Length: 405
Image (cartoon, rainbow, N blue to C red; front, side, top):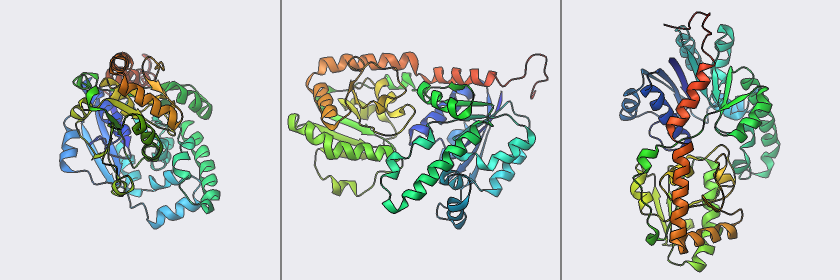
């Protein structure tokens, strides 16, 4: 099939769960013979080496820069436009709309749009040409503000409520135009079906299980790992909660334990805020195998978010014993007590971490169970097959003319 895939960020380097999903799905589909053109509307310049990486398996990569966040156009639209702030930030681009119109003069079997908040520049052209499209939502965006909104001043509450209302209307508007809506978990799909007014398919998040089989966790290090993209508010909330409340309770019982904090976009101020020498500030780690092999436990103290968490799937694929909230394992068919240890409070999560550190044989068995689950249900080959089945529903029936040859 010939696929036009639209993204608001470059999928490489894979510095976040969303980027990791995009990169592996694109690469998996290309390996199956699909010809893919990638249209990017990116706030960051794409380095030549990163573009070259994408061009090794994509037919074409088209990159248009996004205007600065603090532009006058974004400010005015954020206050007065009928669509939410996030759609204004990622939309209202004449050059992008023009380039998209040019692309739709070519025949496509599938037009794939990631995230409802990217949709504004494409809406008019899609409707005018009656072009079917697939929309993938990684989260229920209208319900995702808790980790961000509570950090804003109280005087902004009226705008927050207004923007949430706009996003609920926007989600419905976009999803009802899509030929097929895709979610990443069954629970998200159920919510989105109510918004879209039609069935929603599921294409799971995945893991390169063969790659992560090379990780071998070490219980003797007593190292607890968390990683995430800290441009994403739920990850900031998670690590702040861990360092303020969870780790002090762990250290009361396991004073030799260390906490390794990894990921993209880490604020420099954190080192001064948490000066304990047992906290290791690693930043972005491009190859996780050595890091995972030097750790004993993965901690997922997530209280906000949606979908399923790539960082958790990768930890499970690496055989790391997992201590997690319910939100951390959302969308995953894991059994608490068998595949991971759960906790909803700081005390509960600290107890889970301590049990995994103090009972390495039981922890290793739990890590093996998690690794087997991911291999069975979340390899990227599984996700790619699910997405191909979605695409098959868009193809013409045998008595119809094909979209392209």
